[in-house]
Image 1 (cartoon, rainbow, N blue to C red):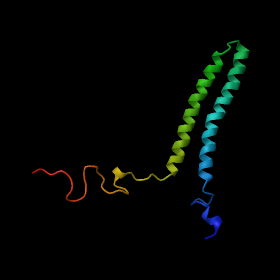
Image 2 (image 1 turned 90 degrees about the vertical axis):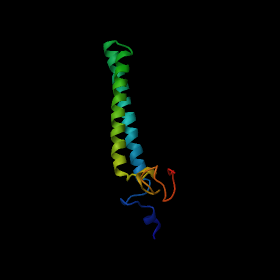
Image 3 (image 1 turned 135 degrees about the horizontal axis):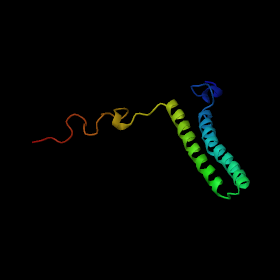
Image 4 (image 1 turned 90 degrees about the horizontal axis):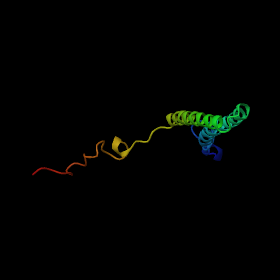
Length: 110
């Protein structure tokens, strides 16, 4: 197998590409609304003479926008990842119920 082929994931890109995409999208949702809100809030406070009020209001709105964007991005990327089966779902580890064990094991009434 070629070394370049071993470094590629199923989508044809390098193995680190999805991580960089997630990082860049979430970072954008954090920094862009906050920076725009701080610039706009400071300008509005200077224009209207309401020193910290509009800056704080715009920062709060930007925080809410950032939360929305981060949740949206995480949901998008988590839908792309196949979920692992947990031990309680009957996946890799056996029984689908924690109270059911192997045959002959467990509590029995005598």
